[in-house]
Image (cartoon, rainbow, N blue to C red; front, side):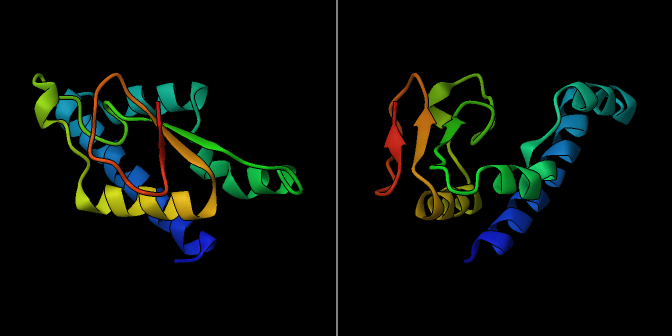
Length: 114
């Protein structure tokens, strides 16, 4: 998967997570949109970020709990979906990528863990 398709897929997943946020937290869109204005998604500005990063080495750091996997009461059942695992692998093929977590997880070969 090329970088443009990967960005489209990530944006699509980001839209899905917005729906899950509203559904799971029982919040309204206004509240989330208000929060998002103060904390914009890098995916919405990806072309700008890439143009400013031209000629520079990019590294990606991803949080595990609540970002790559849902937040759950039992940490042992916090797992990435197969779709998320695939996307993280693709990101790792494009950029040096690290997953930050306080717990041990199944590993992907091309990803660093901390």
